[in-house]
Structure formats: structure tokens, C-alpha cells
Amino acid sequence: MTTCRTVMVKDMPEGVTINCIPQLWRELVVLFGRDWPCLVLDFSAVRELDRAGVELLLRTMEEVVKRNGDVKLAAVSPQIAVILELTRVDRLFETFESTSDAVTSFTSFPFAAVNKNTDERQTYGSEPSRG
Amino acid sequence: MESEWFGTAAIGCTLPFRYGEFPGLPVPCPIDGYVNRLTSAGDLRRLVQDGFLCRCEVRPGGGEIKPGIWVEDGALVHRLARLVAPVYLGSRTNIGASAVVTRFSNIEHHSKVGDGTIVDASSVLPFTELASGLEVSRSVVEGNTLVDVRRNLALCIRDPKLIRDTAPVTRGGAPSREAGRENGTLGFAYSSFFYRAAGRLSEVLFGD
Image (cartoon, rainbow over all chains, first blue to last red; front, side):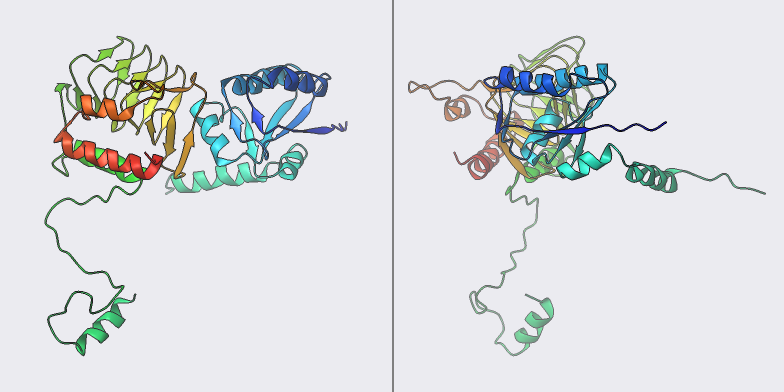
């Protein structure tokens, strides 16, 4: 069986604040309104994120997961990364340096994660001595 | 400048050196004691850590209610809050339910930590209110400005539902941190020194 899923990229506005949340939510609902939505939120232009914006991300994740999809963030600036860490949202979303990386991550095998686990095992694991 | 070059050049000079004989070269000034230049938020964090570890003369004020936990008078700690030594709570601080303060953190006077918020290896300077459910890690927070020590990044957070400045307000309507500083210094002993250090850092970081 083969599956072909379309990855949708949404360019986020400069300010993801309470003022633009209703409009943004309406646009996002259109994007994930079907089964298995694959959504990439491009944060390259975002300069401001407040609590309402964080709630929007959480609601988006909730709705997408209900439909067996996934949301990934791309091009998150250090300032926005600090806010995501501050609100403990960073651990819920996979973040990528560019939009293309995020798009390809939906289809490619996560070799980086495997290598990371292997490295950790080599560093911290202890092989039982034989003989 | 390479030290080898300096040694070679010094051979041909008249001893002792006169100040300014080599313009641009650092002049060694041996000092017996603790030195912290306080040029970054990381330096302030190091000063706090060194104070806890008795590496300098700065000490936490207040009473040591448990080993490694210093609390000033008037501090309110919810019974479900968790304090993991070493930490310092200044006077009139308020730690909410299920909050965690840990790893060399200092919460200075008139600051508030919301319910469920984690303060880890961070300094919360006076008159700062952290909302509920946050995680402040390796940072220095003053008012609505947060400095991430790992990224060396200062960030002004305008959303008062995340971090709020509760400094006394002047007649013009702007929060006056200077008024708060005049009323009370930071809570460490030798606090005049610590206060001046933090004040100078504020000037560097926040442009007061």
C-alpha cells in the first residue's frame, strides 16, 4: 500500500498576537479540514508571539492530531524559540531550520534521530563484559 | 597580542616598564580576591552561584530555613511549592502552588512566581511577576525583559500574561525601577555591592 500526502505550508504573519488570531484560525481551519493533514508553519517572518498565539498553536496541534496528521515549525527565530521554551510548547513541536527541511521530513526517514540515539548509546551505554 | 612577542619586545626595554610604553597592550593588575566583570547576564548568574558556593563575600540574606534554602521575612511559599537547594527567596516574594524553584536560583524581593512555574538556574530580579505554567531556565528576568544566558539574547515580552513588570509607577505612568531600588536593595548580604553590580548590569543589558 502506498500513501501520497500533500504537505501544506502556511506563512505566518509578523505578529502572531491576539489581534490576528481569529483571521489566522479561519485560514488554518481550511488547511487541516481533511484527514491526515501535514502542516508546516513557516515562522521566518514572525517577530512577535504572545499567549494567544501559543494557544493557537496548541489548538492547531490538537485539531491536526485528531485527524491523524502532524504540525511542524520551520525557520523559528531565536526570540520566538525563547518564548516557545518559556511556555513549554517547544517539546510538542518538531522544529526545522528551513521550510524545505520541514517538508521533506514528512516523507524521509528520520536518520538524524536514529544516529542521535546510536551516539547516546555509544556514549552512555555500557556493554556487558563477556568471558 | 602574542605573549611570545611581548616577552621578546620586553627584553630590549628599560625595566621596569612604564605605563603606556606599549600602547594597546593589557597592563597586568594583580588582585587578591574575587573578580567578576559583570559584563553579561552570564556573569550575574556566575556571581549568584559563587555567592551560594561561598566563592566570594556575597552571601544570601535572610534565614536559612533548611540547608541551602534562604528565605527573607515576608516571603509567601505555597505548601505545594517545591524549593530545591540552593535557592534564595527575597522579602515579600510569592511562590505559587506546584511551582518549582531550583538550581542556584534567586527570587528577589516583591517578585511573584505563578502556579506551576519552574524557575531553574535563573535570577528573577525585583518587582517581576511570572505567570502560571512557565519554565524559566538559565535566564535573568527583570520586569518584562528576559535574558537567555545560553543564547545571550535579551527579549522584551509585551504580553503581561506571561511576564509582568510590577515596579512602582511614577507620576508619568512609567514603572520606576529606581524607586524600588531606593526602597530596598537586593537581598544578599553585602547587598549594596550586589545591588550596584546588578544595577550596572541592568544599564548594560537594558539601557536604563
